[in-house]
Image 1 (cartoon, helix red, strand yellow):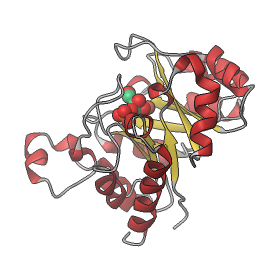
Image 2 (spheres, rainbow, N blue to C red):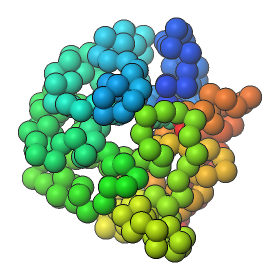
Image 3 (cartoon, rainbow, N blue to C red):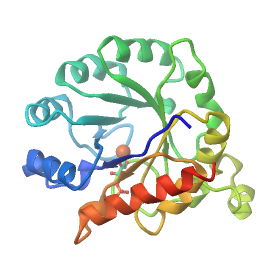
Image 4 (spheres, helix red, strand yellow):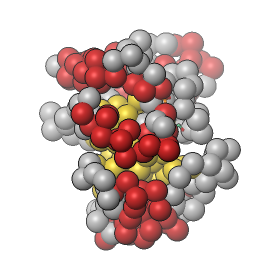
Length: 241
Ligand SMILES: O=C(CO)[C@@H](O)[C@H](O)COP(=O)(O)O
Ligand SMILES: [Fe+2]
């Protein structure tokens, strides 16, 4: 197996007025990456931060800034994010069916690691060409809630295939993570939304190795314990696939 566990607290749940110290706090607690949610108020109904905030944070940390672009026109963001010091740039396939090749090339030429995200209702097959391209994405982010807000309830149907009822209701809502892991043993697969101590095992056993967690980490009395629990779950699950 070529994949390693990455625990990425979602800074959306942090105190934005103290972003740098919140970032240092998470890194001291054992976080590998910092997950940055970029929302444009159009692709999703919420509006968060843009490149200027990434640029400011970059002055305070060398950490991997895992940027998740929930925006209608991700191509417009590539150059500003590259210049701001973003590390990963993950765009949504739902916005980028016609220009993903150009996007991936651009992301790489601006020194960032390209990733693609899918919403819970998007068929996993839509990302196969991007993973298998000559210049491929290096991570697939599977949304385990509808994008837009932190603190939502995990949707098990995005990771697990034994819940037949979900498959019967909506086949495309089913087990994107498990399908991806079977097909791509060495791919970084990130899950995002509603992950915490009570849901991590489902995602980890399905094959996720990069874990975004916002409210469960920031809301915990001992965030370091949650981070370590998430990591242990991923590493234990890796022995099973
Ligand atoms: O991208 C998103 C939401 O759209 C996420 O990154 C959330 O911010 C994760 O927060 P929790 O669900 O873990 O509270
Ligand atoms: Fe996110």
